[in-house]
Length: 235
Ligand SMILES: O=C(O)c1ccccc1N[C@@H]1O[C@H](COP(=O)(O)O)[C@@H](O)[C@H]1O
Image (cartoon, rainbow, N blue to C red; front, side, top):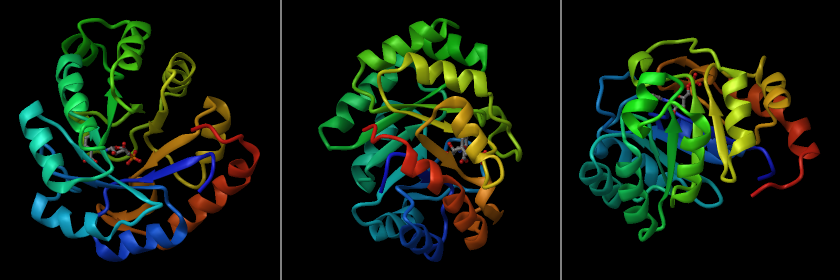
């Protein structure tokens, strides 16, 4: 493992979980009981055996959303290393969830909404600086800058907003993960332009939803390898 961290999301098959671990992916992501129909969604019964395969030094993450009660109960049952809140959770709800999950040693990642209306409804402001300040004061582990949002959750080709990512990276004292439309062909450029050191890729390494492609994944890892060696360890 090294200074640039890689999360691969939307895993649904045991063979892809094994492949990710073999190739050295840091965090393995499972969309679980997401509150909207998305092609990567797993029930908790489907997610549990896959989560159980993930072994240290690799971490696991469930991508979910909903009320604090629902998210805390789900995480307490599945015991991933991380929970990625990616629906409509407000700041208050995020704090309740991350405070509770901290006691279970589960880190929370909160998505910073790229859409203004979502920022207002979740944080009561459109101001990114205020949002980052609040999240950095809270017990969340890290922030996610993602172009995939609930309203385009099932779509392909959500393009990353480089300015938005860089802004969050520059303002945050906590780890920032960037996601959206990355693949072996564009990842190096994106890493260099944003200064990111934690990336999250889903559709860019798959043949169809939930079916990862070994060749694309290997090419992605090979593309980031030169940068992994250049960057100083960050966290
Ligand atoms: O995976 C989902 O179903 C999902 C639903 C709603 C919001 C985000 C979702 N996934 C996240 O999307 C990015 C990766 O996107 P890309 O396919 O690489 O462009 C990642 O953060 C997933 O966790």
